[in-house]
Length: 275
Image (cartoon, rainbow, N blue to C red; front, side):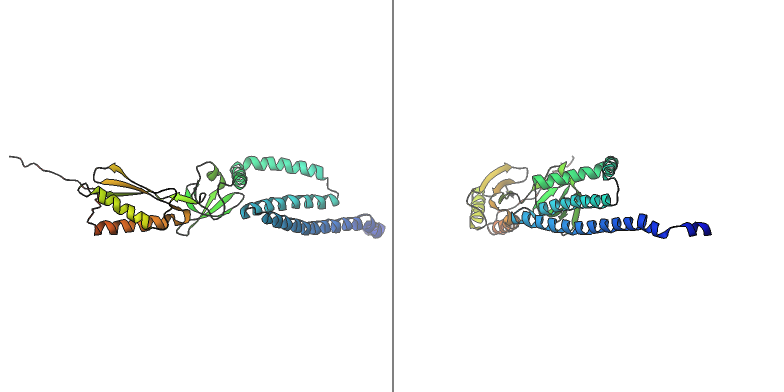
Protein backbone atom coordinates (compact mmCIF):
# COMPACT_ATOMS: atom_id res chain seq x y z
CA UNK A 1 0.00 0.00 0.00
CA UNK A 2 2.85 2.31 0.90
CA UNK A 3 4.59 1.57 -2.41
CA UNK A 4 1.32 2.29 -4.28
CA UNK A 5 1.00 5.68 -2.63
CA UNK A 6 4.64 6.48 -3.33
CA UNK A 7 4.28 5.58 -6.98
CA UNK A 8 0.97 7.48 -7.32
CA UNK A 9 1.50 10.63 -9.33
CA UNK A 10 -0.87 13.16 -7.76
CA UNK A 11 0.03 15.85 -10.26
CA UNK A 12 -0.73 13.53 -13.16
CA UNK A 13 -4.14 12.66 -11.70
CA UNK A 14 -4.97 16.30 -11.30
CA UNK A 15 -3.83 17.18 -14.82
CA UNK A 16 -5.39 14.14 -16.50
CA UNK A 17 -8.68 13.83 -14.61
CA UNK A 18 -9.52 16.35 -11.93
CA UNK A 19 -8.72 19.50 -13.89
CA UNK A 20 -10.47 18.54 -17.18
CA UNK A 21 -13.54 17.21 -15.40
CA UNK A 22 -13.64 20.20 -13.10
CA UNK A 23 -13.60 22.54 -16.08
CA UNK A 24 -16.32 20.51 -17.80
CA UNK A 25 -18.55 20.56 -14.71
CA UNK A 26 -18.06 24.30 -14.27
CA UNK A 27 -18.83 24.94 -17.95
CA UNK A 28 -21.91 22.71 -17.74
CA UNK A 29 -23.17 24.63 -14.69
CA UNK A 30 -22.46 27.95 -16.41
CA UNK A 31 -24.35 26.80 -19.50
CA UNK A 32 -27.28 25.66 -17.35
CA UNK A 33 -27.59 28.83 -15.27
CA UNK A 34 -27.02 31.23 -18.16
CA UNK A 35 -29.37 29.17 -20.34
CA UNK A 36 -32.04 29.29 -17.64
CA UNK A 37 -31.68 33.08 -17.45
CA UNK A 38 -31.93 33.37 -21.24
CA UNK A 39 -35.03 31.14 -21.23
CA UNK A 40 -36.64 33.41 -18.65
CA UNK A 41 -35.89 36.50 -20.76
CA UNK A 42 -37.19 34.84 -23.96
CA UNK A 43 -40.39 33.57 -22.31
CA UNK A 44 -41.03 37.00 -20.76
CA UNK A 45 -40.55 38.69 -24.14
CA UNK A 46 -42.88 36.21 -25.86
CA UNK A 47 -45.55 36.70 -23.18
CA UNK A 48 -45.31 40.48 -23.63
CA UNK A 49 -45.53 40.12 -27.42
CA UNK A 50 -48.57 37.82 -27.27
CA UNK A 51 -50.33 40.00 -24.70
CA UNK A 52 -49.63 43.06 -26.87
CA UNK A 53 -51.47 41.41 -29.74
CA UNK A 54 -54.60 41.11 -27.61
CA UNK A 55 -54.34 37.36 -27.16
CA UNK A 56 -56.33 35.74 -24.35
CA UNK A 57 -54.52 35.60 -20.97
CA UNK A 58 -55.13 31.85 -20.62
CA UNK A 59 -53.70 31.18 -24.09
CA UNK A 60 -50.66 33.37 -23.35
CA UNK A 61 -49.99 31.53 -20.09
CA UNK A 62 -50.44 28.12 -21.71
CA UNK A 63 -48.13 28.80 -24.66
CA UNK A 64 -45.52 30.42 -22.42
CA UNK A 65 -45.50 27.40 -20.13
CA UNK A 66 -44.93 25.00 -23.03
CA UNK A 67 -42.21 27.25 -24.49
CA UNK A 68 -40.43 27.43 -21.12
CA UNK A 69 -40.24 23.65 -20.70
CA UNK A 70 -39.12 23.05 -24.29
CA UNK A 71 -36.33 25.62 -24.03
CA UNK A 72 -35.24 24.28 -20.64
CA UNK A 73 -34.99 20.81 -22.15
CA UNK A 74 -32.56 22.14 -24.80
CA UNK A 75 -30.55 23.89 -22.09
CA UNK A 76 -30.25 20.66 -20.07
CA UNK A 77 -29.18 18.71 -23.17
CA UNK A 78 -26.54 21.37 -23.97
CA UNK A 79 -25.20 21.23 -20.42
CA UNK A 80 -25.02 17.44 -20.45
CA UNK A 81 -23.25 17.42 -23.83
CA UNK A 82 -20.55 19.60 -22.26
CA UNK A 83 -19.89 16.75 -19.84
CA UNK A 84 -19.27 14.40 -22.73
CA UNK A 85 -22.60 12.59 -22.45
CA UNK A 86 -23.94 11.27 -25.75
CA UNK A 87 -27.09 13.39 -26.08
CA UNK A 88 -28.20 11.49 -29.19
CA UNK A 89 -28.66 8.30 -27.24
CA UNK A 90 -30.13 10.35 -24.40
CA UNK A 91 -32.80 11.79 -26.69
CA UNK A 92 -33.60 8.28 -27.90
CA UNK A 93 -33.80 7.12 -24.30
CA UNK A 94 -36.11 10.01 -23.44
CA UNK A 95 -38.28 9.12 -26.42
CA UNK A 96 -38.59 5.51 -25.28
CA UNK A 97 -39.28 6.61 -21.72
CA UNK A 98 -41.87 9.07 -22.99
CA UNK A 99 -43.62 6.29 -24.92
CA UNK A 100 -43.71 4.05 -21.84
CA UNK A 101 -44.96 6.89 -19.65
CA UNK A 102 -47.53 7.81 -22.27
CA UNK A 103 -48.95 4.30 -22.34
CA UNK A 104 -49.26 4.28 -18.55
CA UNK A 105 -50.75 7.78 -18.40
CA UNK A 106 -53.32 7.61 -21.17
CA UNK A 107 -55.98 9.46 -19.18
CA UNK A 108 -53.57 12.26 -18.25
CA UNK A 109 -52.43 12.60 -21.85
CA UNK A 110 -56.06 12.69 -22.93
CA UNK A 111 -56.62 15.57 -20.51
CA UNK A 112 -53.51 17.26 -21.88
CA UNK A 113 -54.71 16.92 -25.48
CA UNK A 114 -58.13 18.20 -24.42
CA UNK A 115 -56.48 21.17 -22.73
CA UNK A 116 -54.67 22.01 -25.97
CA UNK A 117 -57.97 21.81 -27.86
CA UNK A 118 -59.69 24.07 -25.32
CA UNK A 119 -56.91 26.62 -25.67
CA UNK A 120 -56.84 26.51 -29.47
CA UNK A 121 -60.56 26.39 -30.27
CA UNK A 122 -61.61 28.48 -27.24
CA UNK A 123 -65.22 27.40 -26.66
CA UNK A 124 -64.97 29.57 -23.56
CA UNK A 125 -62.45 31.81 -21.85
CA UNK A 126 -61.72 33.20 -18.41
CA UNK A 127 -64.72 34.98 -16.92
CA UNK A 128 -67.34 33.14 -19.00
CA UNK A 129 -70.28 31.52 -17.22
CA UNK A 130 -70.53 27.98 -18.58
CA UNK A 131 -71.99 24.54 -18.07
CA UNK A 132 -69.31 21.96 -18.83
CA UNK A 133 -68.18 18.59 -17.55
CA UNK A 134 -71.24 18.23 -15.32
CA UNK A 135 -70.65 21.54 -13.48
CA UNK A 136 -71.88 25.12 -13.87
CA UNK A 137 -69.87 28.18 -12.94
CA UNK A 138 -67.54 30.99 -13.96
CA UNK A 139 -64.28 29.98 -15.65
CA UNK A 140 -61.28 30.89 -13.48
CA UNK A 141 -58.46 29.14 -15.31
CA UNK A 142 -57.65 26.56 -17.98
CA UNK A 143 -54.48 24.61 -17.25
CA UNK A 144 -52.80 21.79 -19.13
CA UNK A 145 -54.82 19.05 -17.46
CA UNK A 146 -57.80 20.70 -15.73
CA UNK A 147 -60.22 23.61 -15.88
CA UNK A 148 -61.27 25.45 -12.72
CA UNK A 149 -64.77 26.88 -12.28
CA UNK A 150 -66.28 28.93 -9.47
CA UNK A 151 -69.94 28.14 -8.82
CA UNK A 152 -72.50 30.88 -8.04
CA UNK A 153 -72.32 29.92 -4.34
CA UNK A 154 -68.51 30.36 -4.47
CA UNK A 155 -67.40 26.74 -4.56
CA UNK A 156 -64.33 25.81 -6.58
CA UNK A 157 -64.82 22.95 -9.06
CA UNK A 158 -61.80 21.40 -10.81
CA UNK A 159 -62.78 19.42 -13.92
CA UNK A 160 -60.50 17.18 -16.02
CA UNK A 161 -60.26 18.66 -19.50
CA UNK A 162 -61.15 15.30 -21.06
CA UNK A 163 -64.56 15.37 -19.36
CA UNK A 164 -65.23 18.80 -20.86
CA UNK A 165 -64.27 17.96 -24.43
CA UNK A 166 -66.20 14.67 -24.43
CA UNK A 167 -69.47 16.33 -23.35
CA UNK A 168 -71.66 19.24 -24.38
CA UNK A 169 -70.46 22.74 -23.49
CA UNK A 170 -72.99 25.51 -22.85
CA UNK A 171 -71.48 28.99 -22.77
CA UNK A 172 -74.00 31.42 -21.29
CA UNK A 173 -71.64 34.37 -21.85
CA UNK A 174 -70.85 33.73 -25.51
CA UNK A 175 -73.61 35.98 -26.87
CA UNK A 176 -74.22 39.60 -25.87
CA UNK A 177 -77.99 39.11 -25.50
CA UNK A 178 -80.22 36.30 -24.21
CA UNK A 179 -83.92 35.50 -24.21
CA UNK A 180 -85.56 35.19 -20.80
CA UNK A 181 -88.16 32.40 -20.95
CA UNK A 182 -90.95 32.68 -18.37
CA UNK A 183 -94.34 31.00 -17.96
CA UNK A 184 -97.16 32.54 -15.91
CA UNK A 185 -100.42 30.70 -15.30
CA UNK A 186 -103.82 32.16 -14.45
CA UNK A 187 -107.08 30.55 -13.46
CA UNK A 188 -109.64 29.47 -16.06
CA UNK A 189 -112.09 31.87 -14.38
CA UNK A 190 -109.89 34.95 -14.96
CA UNK A 191 -109.98 37.35 -17.91
CA UNK A 192 -107.16 36.33 -20.27
CA UNK A 193 -107.24 39.69 -22.11
CA UNK A 194 -106.77 41.57 -18.86
CA UNK A 195 -103.91 39.26 -17.81
CA UNK A 196 -102.17 39.61 -21.16
CA UNK A 197 -102.44 43.40 -21.05
CA UNK A 198 -100.87 43.45 -17.58
CA UNK A 199 -97.99 41.28 -18.77
CA UNK A 200 -97.43 43.57 -21.75
CA UNK A 201 -97.38 46.64 -19.46
CA UNK A 202 -94.87 44.99 -17.10
CA UNK A 203 -92.49 44.07 -19.92
CA UNK A 204 -92.84 47.45 -21.66
CA UNK A 205 -92.05 49.32 -18.43
CA UNK A 206 -88.74 47.52 -17.84
CA UNK A 207 -85.83 49.41 -19.43
CA UNK A 208 -83.69 46.29 -19.51
CA UNK A 209 -85.98 44.65 -22.08
CA UNK A 210 -84.64 45.12 -25.62
CA UNK A 211 -86.90 46.42 -28.38
CA UNK A 212 -85.13 44.30 -30.98
CA UNK A 213 -85.68 41.38 -30.96
CA UNK A 214 -89.20 42.19 -29.86
CA UNK A 215 -90.53 40.46 -26.75
CA UNK A 216 -93.13 37.73 -27.17
CA UNK A 217 -96.19 37.47 -24.92
CA UNK A 218 -98.62 34.78 -26.02
CA UNK A 219 -101.14 32.29 -24.68
CA UNK A 220 -99.10 29.12 -24.82
CA UNK A 221 -101.06 26.33 -23.19
CA UNK A 222 -104.41 25.33 -21.73
CA UNK A 223 -103.02 23.18 -18.94
CA UNK A 224 -104.84 20.95 -16.46
CA UNK A 225 -105.05 23.58 -13.72
CA UNK A 226 -104.16 26.86 -15.43
CA UNK A 227 -104.09 28.95 -18.58
CA UNK A 228 -100.38 29.51 -19.24
CA UNK A 229 -98.89 32.62 -20.85
CA UNK A 230 -95.44 32.51 -22.45
CA UNK A 231 -93.44 35.65 -21.70
CA UNK A 232 -90.18 35.88 -23.63
CA UNK A 233 -88.35 39.21 -23.53
CA UNK A 234 -84.75 39.72 -24.71
CA UNK A 235 -82.08 41.37 -22.57
CA UNK A 236 -78.34 41.81 -22.29
CA UNK A 237 -76.64 38.70 -20.94
CA UNK A 238 -75.57 40.48 -17.75
CA UNK A 239 -79.22 41.49 -17.07
CA UNK A 240 -80.65 37.98 -17.50
CA UNK A 241 -81.08 36.91 -13.87
CA UNK A 242 -82.10 40.31 -12.55
CA UNK A 243 -84.79 40.62 -15.22
CA UNK A 244 -86.06 37.09 -14.55
CA UNK A 245 -86.36 37.59 -10.79
CA UNK A 246 -87.75 41.12 -10.92
CA UNK A 247 -90.34 40.25 -13.55
CA UNK A 248 -91.53 37.22 -11.58
CA UNK A 249 -91.99 39.35 -8.46
CA UNK A 250 -93.72 42.17 -10.34
CA UNK A 251 -96.15 39.79 -12.06
CA UNK A 252 -97.20 38.31 -8.72
CA UNK A 253 -97.78 41.75 -7.18
CA UNK A 254 -99.69 43.12 -10.19
CA UNK A 255 -101.83 39.99 -10.51
CA UNK A 256 -102.73 40.23 -6.82
CA UNK A 257 -103.73 43.88 -7.26
CA UNK A 258 -105.89 42.98 -10.25
CA UNK A 259 -107.48 39.95 -8.51
CA UNK A 260 -106.00 37.58 -11.05
CA UNK A 261 -105.41 34.16 -9.58
CA UNK A 262 -102.19 32.21 -10.04
CA UNK A 263 -103.48 28.65 -9.52
CA UNK A 264 -101.62 25.74 -8.03
CA UNK A 265 -102.16 22.06 -8.82
CA UNK A 266 -105.10 20.62 -6.95
CA UNK A 267 -107.39 17.63 -7.12
CA UNK A 268 -111.11 17.48 -6.41
CA UNK A 269 -112.23 14.18 -4.87
CA UNK A 270 -115.93 13.26 -5.08
CA UNK A 271 -117.18 10.49 -2.85
CA UNK A 272 -120.48 8.76 -3.54
CA UNK A 273 -122.38 7.72 -0.43
CA UNK A 274 -123.52 4.15 -0.65
CA UNK A 275 -127.19 3.45 -0.03
